[in-house]
Length: 220
Image 1 (cartoon, one colour):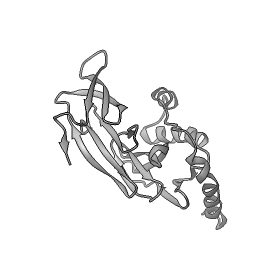
Image 2: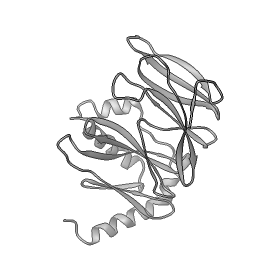
Image 3: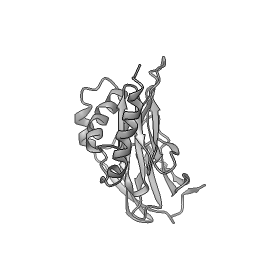
């Protein structure tokens, strides 16, 4: 059991880092970094921990790991904790992945058994939103997009979310109508998305552009 002074030490460390973390640039691990770090990982949860070890150093003061518990600083004050759980299917784990200063949020990498996901934590409110893939924020900071495409266990849709201080909500979704092995999304403007995707069985990726005003979106 941790000593009584341990929680206070964690709180103090997070409080000191709250302001500095807010000023840290976007620092998501690159695909190349993840591939290198996780080359010999025992599984998704272990991969998350290996990435987190790098991110804790890259984002000093943003979070503190204490055994199975990750404590993340809120802003301007407070903390939010995430405790790993064990289960027959492998349990649920949380690992620090990124900070998205454009919308004052932290992204955690999660595992639930064999299912991999992400969790968006808004630092101003502590509100949590489960996401199937990493959020990509628009240049005007009003929205973010999530591309969740793969051969199995994916929704196979591109979703756009509206950002507000008190939470985020899904605004629209689009499906390709074809099988894709993977996909990634970026913004080229406040209302334009570019999707880089790999069609099933294709040797090379392709790309397409979609505007938020295009037809084919399902609106929420």
